Length: 605
Image 1: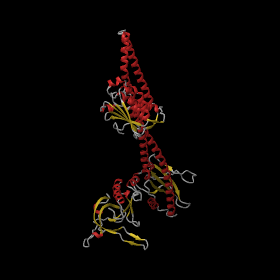
Image 2: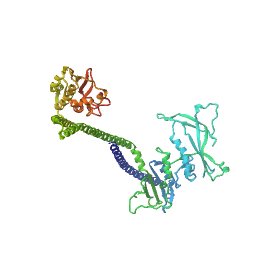
Image 3: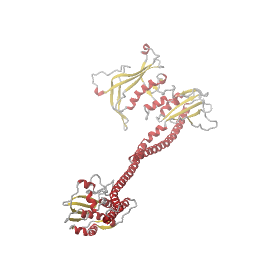
Image 4: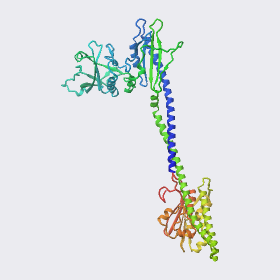
């Protein structure tokens, strides 16, 4: 049975696992398709926005500053989930400019000031991807630890050529700041060794909206610095390097310097071949006669990729071709969106699986108990039948040999008695089997235990008179229950039978009646602890020699407990003042086992 239970658990767990996996995959796929629709719409809106920017910049003589258009556009559409790039081609479909120059670049652009009056420098023209990754980590550390209450931890500076045309170095310094109030009046201000500047910063400035007046915040001064990372242009000699100009640089990284930016977002952009590898000679696939170009999908299953190819310019204007591309990972977005659904689904599946396994465990345990009871019953019955069968065989053999004819009647009477005993055993086994049947149903009527006891005592009148036993009734109330009178009479008969058979000559039977219970006590030999422990076991007879002589088969108390349990009653057996004491009362219902079953000890539920 244990092996059967284990074999059941594996398919149940596997079945729930497969069901959970399939449901979650299907749900995630549906959410993924919803994200794809949103991505398509976002790409279309980005294409329309870029076209409008170009229309605003175009003039018939000079065309448009496409590089400026692309840069302005790029910083306006940054979204880590949906990454977009674009490129312009001239009327001969030759590449004019794109949002990134390097094949694995990141469009990292250095502005020496925000007014853009000075030149800008494309980092991918100078730094390798690995070098840019190291630089971005410092910028990302500034972003993720940003606070309006203190200055940035790192400062990025650049060194350029005297004519400002070439980038010579990029330097990252770790800065130590102190509040100005903590610096003594006689203490000299720290000059940064890189450019000799005294840096100070006011943080947390607020505005009085009523007057428009700025309210002061905290003032910080630089008190120390150290260079933690530096890139130097390998084409510039050390002697020439001293002629360069040091400037504070504001470095902008796509998908890093934005509201929802992250290092992972920038890195995905930086290594994407699809967003960067625009052909030098454009190949446009706009179908002839189409009023509006269709999106070209280049998805590879995991990443969703799409592009629009547009023709810009009115009649007389310079003809320009534009391609805008999008790359997104809808599966990642769907998984992130569904993470709480996964957890809730897992908890629900685990709860259902546990419930089912527990229910089947209960069924298997019940089957195991029934199987064990049936096996014990079969063994015990075989053992009980073996003795009378042996006796019958011996008497029958003696009769067959015609020995001692004067004992013929005795042999026949013993054979008949043993046969009757076997018949009674079979009848009780059939009755016990009937009680265990699922179709068995009890009648329901109000029954008086006092009447039942009196009826059974009267049946034993001759034996009681012969053994000179005194029967006493005590108590003013009657113990009344609802149940099947016939079966309850059989249970009470077994109790009275034991009280008479195991009593002593001149003994006493005391019947105490109360509203909640009935107690039957007889004088006689006390029961041992082992006898009390096994008294309700099938075919248990204690003193077996005495049991056989009195006609007991060891089924009386077992049947009694079974019948009473079916009526919601329990029987407790113990030693009284003068002998054995049997108590019948309403059973305490255990939550997990029902009426009449013990929960750990013999007399306690």
